Length: 626
Ligand SMILES: [Cu+2]
Image (cartoon, rainbow, N blue to C red; front, side, top):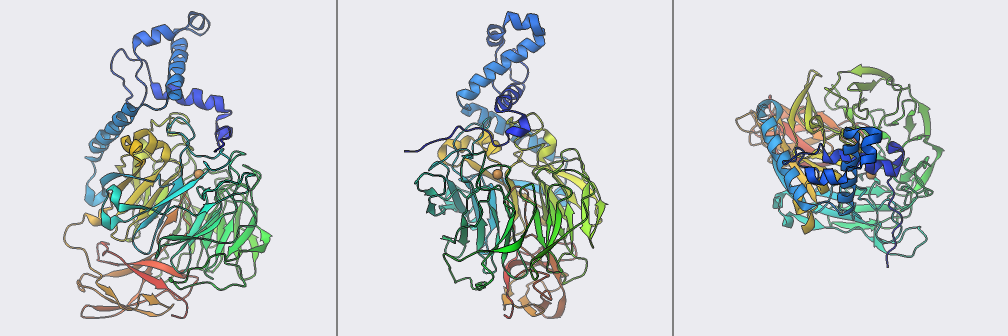
C-alpha cells in the first residue's frame, strides 16, 4: 500500500502560501470571460451564462463588477483544476504554440539564426539529461503524482513508494518514435523515510557529472516530505551496458546538490538540502570515489559499492545548486547563487579561498553559467560567464583572473535558462522563464510570455542577437544538449509538457525538440571526420585523425558532453586543438597539455571549416598515461 503526504508545494515561500498559489494560477489561466471564443486557448472556456451564474451580488456590491467577475472566474477555474486538466486544452494550446512558432520564426534566416525542426513526444520529462559516449541521451526524472500543470506534479512531498524516479535512454540513431526510447529503470531501493518500501530510486533533483570512464555519477535525490529533503543515494549509470550501479551512501542527504569532475578524475559533491528538509543545506564536501580508492579510466570496469569520503572543510553555500567548474589552474570554482558565496576549492590541499563578491550584489534564481573557451588553442577554460538567474537583470558577469567584469547583456533577464557553447565558439541561450513554475503570468500558469520561448545567440564578437522561438516554453527543469551531429536537443519542464502534450495518456508525457544551429545552414558541404586512430589518448599527445575533406579543415575542437539540470552544467567546455601536421587526408592534433585543461573523460571531437561548420563528431577519451 502506498502512502501519500499532503502534496504541498515545494516553493510555497515564493507564493506566500499554498492557497495563494492556486488563486494566482487558476484565474490567470482563464483570461477574460468571452462571449463565445476563448482568447486564451490554454485556459478554461467560460461562457457568459456560466459567469453570470457564478457572480455573487454581495461581491459586486463590495468590490465592483470587474473584480467580482474576476473572483467568479477564479472559482470556476479552481473547480476546473480540481477536475483535472481537460485533454482538449492540451490539443488547443499545442496548436497555438505550433502556429505561433511558425509565424514568428518566418522572420529568421536559418543561416543567421538557425532553425527548429523536429518536435516529438518522449517517455520522460527530461528534467535531467546526459549525453552518453555511445551517442545516446540519458533522460531521467520522476513518476508524476498529478497530471495537471496547475499543480505540483513531482512527488516532492510524497513519502514511500510513490516517491520514485524513472529513467530512459533515447537513441537519436533510431529516430524520434517511441521505439527509439528504452526504459532504464533506476535500481529499486528503500530510502530513510521510516517506511520499508521499495521503489525505483528517487534520483530527481540530484546532481551529476561524468566519470573518467564515460559513466555518469548521480548523487542525492528526494527523500520525500518536509518540502523536499535529501536522499543519500549515490548511483553510477554505465552507458556501455545501460545498467545502474549503486555505490555506498552519501554521508549527508542532498536534494539539489552540485557535482563537478575535477582534474584528478574525482567528483566533488556539495550543497543540496539535507535530511531534515528544505532550507538546511548539506555543506560538507564529499568526494567520489574516496581518495584512498582508485579512479577508474576503464569503460569496461563496473564497480558497485565504491566508497565516498569527505573533505576536512565545508562549502558554506546557503543556497542550492551552485555553479561548479574545474578550471585551468586545477582548482574547483564554486559560484553560489548568492552574490557573496563565491569560493575556490583546491583539491590538492583540500582548502578553500573566498572569491570577490559577484557585482550584482543579489541572489540569483536558477540560471545558466558557462566556462568560456580559452583564447589560446590547447588551453582549457580559465574564465566563467554567469548569465541567467535574474528575471529583471539582462546583464552577464564574467569572472576571470580573480576579478569580475560586466559582459555584454542579453536582451532581457530570464531565469531557468540554458546556455550552450557551440563547436564554433558562439554561445546559445535556450529555455527560460520568469521564475520557478512561472512564465510571466503567475505561478503554475502554463501560459508563457512569448519572450521566454525566444533563443539568443552570442556571436564571436561578444554581442547577443535574438533568434527563433522554440515550440514549447520551457522553464524550470528544462535542458539542452549538443548531439554529436551538431544538432541541439531541447527538452524538460514537466509543467509545460503536461500542459501541452496530447500524448500524455499514452505514456509519452515528455517532449523533445530539435534545433539546428546556423552552422548547419551555411550551404555547401560539411567537413568530415572519418577516423580517429587513437581515440584513447593521453595529454600533450598526438591525436591522429583522418578526414575526407582535408582542404576544408581549418580547426579541431574538443567539446565536453553535456549533463545538466536546473540550469547547472558543470562539465561543458570547448577546447581548440592545435593541428600540428597534415599530410593528404591525415591530420595530427595536439591534445591539451594537462588534466587541468580538460579533466579525464570522454569528449566530442569536431573538425571545423573556415566558416565554423563542424563535422559530425567522434568520441575521444582523454586518459592520463594513455
Ligand atoms: Cu527540481
